[in-house]
Amino acid sequence: MNVRDGTRPGTLYWIDHYVVASANLDRWTDFMTRIVGAQQPYGAGRAARGSIAFQDITPCCHHGAMLSAEPLPASPGLGNGLPRHGLYIRREDVDAHLRRLDEHGVPHLDPVRTSAAGEEGVSIVWEDPDRNQFEFWAPDHLPEGAMAYATPLGVGRISHAMYESRDLQRAADHFDTYCAVEPEVNSDTEKDSLVLRLVGGVRIIYKQVEHLQQRTGGWGKLQANHAALVVRDDDFWSNYERMWQRLPEWEWDRENKEFVGVGPDLPARTARHGSPAGQRWFDIRGRGDDWYDHDTNCFHFMGGAPRDGAFSKYEPHTMEWHLPRYLDEHGERPLA
Ligand SMILES: [Fe+2]
Image (cartoon, rainbow, N blue to C red; front, side):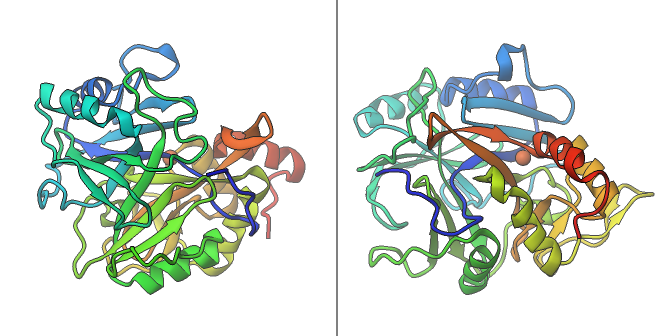
């Protein structure tokens, strides 16, 4: 599959990174180095400093874990917990990945051939020592760019992220309005699933549930749990602007350094982002560049510039990159 041109302004191309929660960051990063082949960023030593640790999976995507001050919410078990994050592998490598999981004693399900979430392929579901859920995904047709870079263990970029939703239509409307992504219609897709395919070929998948588990940012304890969704650099500010015009802001209590109210009854909203640029922007504009769906899942946009003219490899641009350019052009005047 070729990386298509975005047909709608503001549409999503890739999932740049995700962050999950961990009780032990050194354990988590060591595990991910052994199982995924993720590397400490920029060739530095151990990444587990402070309360969050990042690792590169490929030069185009990374992942991280935040230290949870409290015991992590209970896991409903291997394959049942959400969110679940998927990583591409090649079909011919399925056995090798399986062997590695077994050698390291990683709990995993048997490989299964499935087309339940919009495409045909082989899935191996596994979990990390904190019982966060992952999946190696070997589709029959790898999107261009899926393995443009791979780790030394043959793991490619993030293939999908699977979330809970109490109302699939509401989740679809949210992504249609704010991310210019429409549901994929496919007769194989299970009825309890919503598949949102991004331009690069990767998927955001929502599963219908009645009650939400609690390993997401909107419950107030694991606020670093999120995924970053890549848009063209040109769409970065306009996508946020659309949200800031229509969605409420999660109130930030500056004195106590915490959000006001938490939980699944809060509406979709934007929220102060803890990064230095995110904090600065919040001080300037009073709006945050994190955003939440209706079901406690947290995201932010990430700008991207095509490399070599194609978006199959892109140069990632965070708020730290965009904000100084914005301020050079506009000063500290609010956008609207
Ligand atoms: Fe992020």
